[in-house]
Figure 1 (tube, helix red, strand yellow):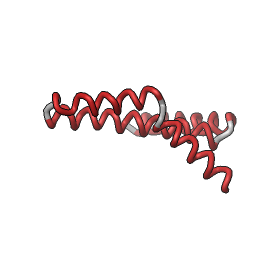
Figure 2 (spheres, helix red, strand yellow):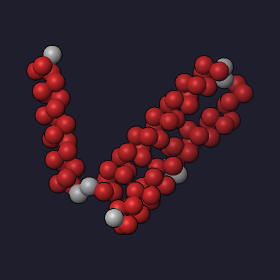
Figure 3 (tube, rainbow, N blue to C red):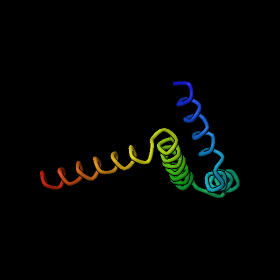
Figure 4 (cartoon, rainbow, N blue to C red):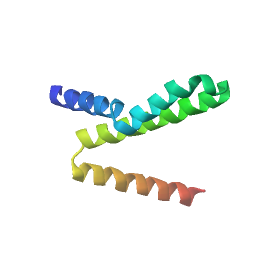
Length: 87
């Protein structure tokens, strides 16, 4: 459990300090006074979405083996197919 926790912590840190994520954060800081409140809110949403996606991706890769990841993707595909059939 401790090793898993450490992997999650490291993956989260890597996501926060990812070059693309840091560039987005820098852009927000430098452009804040030039953006309207609505534009700033939209940019914050984009930043948050990117950070969440990056964190999820890195944590998933840190805690799942390749076989487990493939099994999860297959299950998602099956659920999507089932959802389409029900609609």
